[in-house]
Length: 129
Image (cartoon, rainbow, N blue to C red):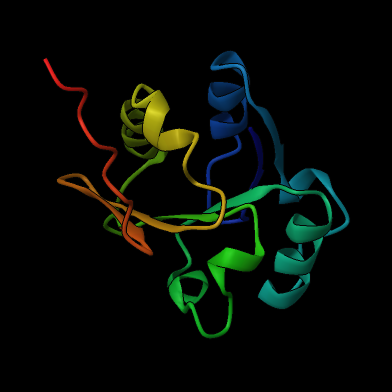
């Protein structure tokens, strides 16, 4: 997948995503480093990149409709968390490859206890035995 990491994400998360086989860019390495959220969202949409952020503004589906995007992964973690804690949570999520691939068109809220998708994921029917 292609990701755009917001300014509030550790730059080291870019390497974490790359090691997992994803194309990741941090806004700090682009002309977007001081850009407003709307501009970041437009750029991500143009490049078909899912945004990874800790900014709860991106969780407003009226302002940033997920169905019109490559998706939003919003981490809800304490402000006191350091890069290693954030990267550990992100790494746990990346190991759930089937969920990662379902980010496009969704708002995904990731916190230390759960992963929530909006709109909710449709459960695939189980094969009959």
